[in-house]
Image 1 (cartoon, rainbow, N blue to C red):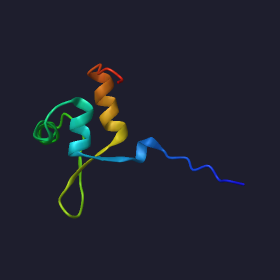
Image 2: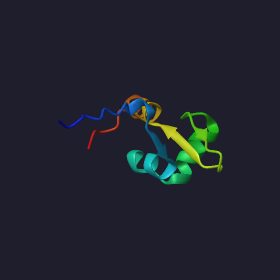
Image 3: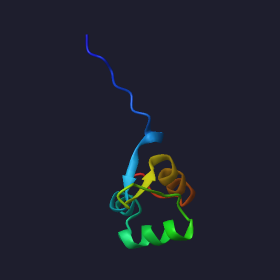
Image 4: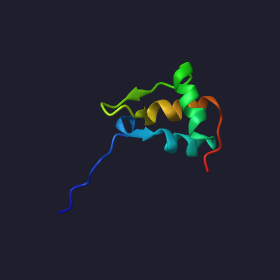
Length: 68
């Protein structure tokens, strides 16, 4: 019997580059959004910026991005 693994998309973390690809912008634009508070971000202990899936897609929905 195979166990099904459920992933809660709310707990997935995305990099600046991954978010940039979703919005079709440069990673520096995403960094600017994070600095301005347009999108909620978190810093890793190594100093990298990460974004929660739920926050990214809440902004995408607000911006009415196409789903392709």
